[in-house]
Image (cartoon, rainbow, N blue to C red; front, side, top):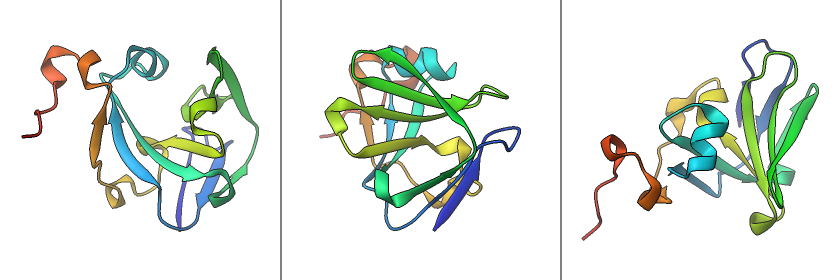
Length: 121
């Protein structure tokens, strides 16, 4: 089990089981939504996550809902029609983010020059 919360603690979560993936996303939408050079997501099925508190959502594009704390504004999650039944949680929201290691880089073609992942050979 892994747990986490937003900056102010108004929204918290607990996950169970093994995540489906851990990956760095370099897309422009994730950069803008988080204010970071890239976002590291930990993906779970919806039934693996128990949320406490009022997580608000923003429809950032068609079929996409980005979750955040309506009190402090901390970005927390991503749900997209492309990955129905999954919720992806930002690694920095976990109490012990070091327990997860990214295994992939997605949308690497959109990565900022100083964040370009190495090309697999």
